[in-house]
Amino acid sequence: MLNSSSFNEFLLLAFAATRELQLLHFSLFLGIYLAALLGNGLIITAVACDHHLHTPMYFFLLNLSILDLGSISTTVPKAMANSLWDTRAISYSGCAAQLFLVIFSLGAECSLLTVMAYDRYVAICRPLHYGTLMDSRACVKMAAAAWGSSFVNALLHTGNTFSIPLCQGNVVKQFLCEIPQILRLSCSESYLREAGLLVVSLCLGFGCFVFIVVSYVQIFTVVLRIPSEQGRHKAFSMCLPHLAVVSLLISTGMFAYLKPPSFSSPAVDLVVAVLYSVVPPAVNPLIYSMRNKELKEALKRLIQWVQDQQQ
Image: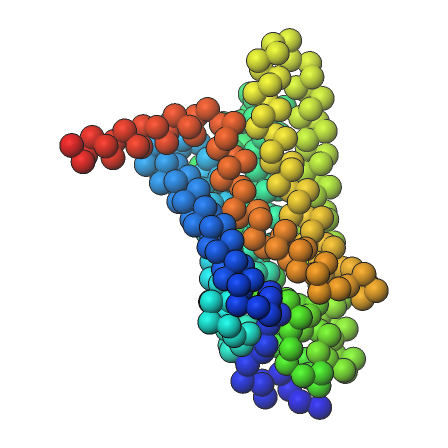
């Protein structure tokens, strides 16, 4: 039996065997990555520079965009490099760092989406108390709690996973370092400790999902009582995209980490991993900005300011 540290590197899943398909994969991921960089970068710049957006909702959106930039930068550039250079290798330390950052990103995004749901609940269901419940100090504390708890959670998972003795080789059947795939390389009972911790973390994630759903049920109950059709439309346009992002992230994440081995196949695992690690960071800017009038106006002011500076 060998300890995981005896490996110098792991071998990731190759997307394709032919050079043409490898270059196609590189091009697709490059387009997704550039779109994510542009979209999240614009949101970060607009929220940071426009004082009209210095509100709790956009403060949490700023945090989410920063997290999305880090999240997609953890996995996609390495996958692109492997396709471009026709290699599958990732160093032992690189795999550990990637796994840590993936778990951290998933946990922090789930926590931030939960806080954003609470923010929408207070804004719509308890508007008179909004200034008290969501003041700047409370927002900073909630954001710090989301980042801090996710850091500790990721540290525990990474430490547990890479302390497990491995005897099934070093081939990770995924395009990124993922806990379930590394646990399959173990042939000792010590993996049960990490599996138990994983179940606890996913139960907490499911608890966040339940909290979000309950919050939105109460929000929709209040929204349906609004006499103005425009008011109902505005409320739904803010809440429904958020709910869609949460549903995609939680459902694919739980499926990836809790599915039984009988449901596992390279194609299914690959699609699910892309859905929870690549798609949300790329589509979040589109979802949150496409129907957000204030953010659109802030981006227009930003573009106008840049044009004025160039003249």
